[in-house]
Amino acid sequence: LRRLLVAGPFAAETTVQGGGSARVRPRMCPSILGALSAELASNVRVVHKPGCYGSEWRQTTAELEALKTMGGCNARGRPSSLNRLSLFSDNFLILAAWLSQGELLRRYFMPILRALGVRQSDPIEVAAREASGQDQRPALMLLAFLATAVGVLAVAGGARARLTLAACAGACVAIACLLACLARRSQMREERMLEEAVAAAREADACLLVIGTDGHWESEGGDQPHMRLPGRQNELVSRVVAAARGPVIVMLNVGSPKELPWIDGVPAVLLAHYGGEEMASSAVDVLLGRVCPSGRLPATWPRRLCESPAAAAAATEEAR
Image (cartoon, rainbow, N blue to C red):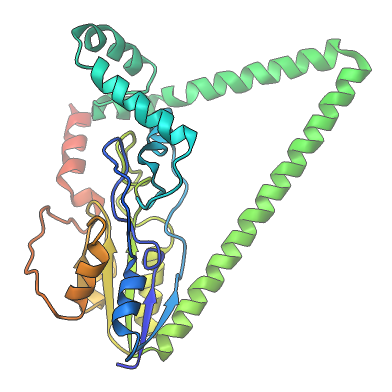
């Protein structure tokens, strides 16, 4: 082994913990790429290519956005700067945990949060709200109010008001065009990243793909929209497997089961989950054959979402 390709969006920025209120701020978190490069520096040339992005847009909630600020960590659970927002969120959580011990808060305050959509623990209720469109009602009401206000100003405000509205409309169009250009540029950059990873796989003696999710994707406060790997990570694996001249090993840096349509085309898959501060060095020991964990899956991994027990149970409840 002279040339090793380490690809995937989670090779250089490995996720060490999930998201939510139980986050802690770690001290040191070496990545898979860093730990492996340190071990093979004298004998093997390690080439790194991210290949694609490791995230995608998802519908969010006020609770989920607040949870992202806790613990002084970034999306991968790695230490970041402790700003005022993080300190406020952590102290607010301590206060909320103390208040939740009282019967008054649980009996009267929590139902209010549920009515506002902040705390929704019943999956049947959440599915019913999404099917009826209730989750979109506040946004639609806001848009209707803004449209009415603009119409009133345009009719009764005179020439000056109409000029101001025209300027605002032009600014909105300019911002939309700018966002569209940035999105297109991001897509083109990701396509180049994929092509670079495929080209590097043709020249490498072996390939290690580190793919997965981050703590903002797997967190309390919001359900995952699907069971696939976010972004184009499945495409990255398929294209690298098709182009590689040597073996391809996949490392899954995830917190829950995912659909793996390419699993029959790779010789080995290492499930690392979120292993904390020292997960990189432990994973490298397994990859280099120093230890054999002989682990067993703690949960059943369905091939598709429709085969999971949770999906079957939800379909049964909807039928009732």
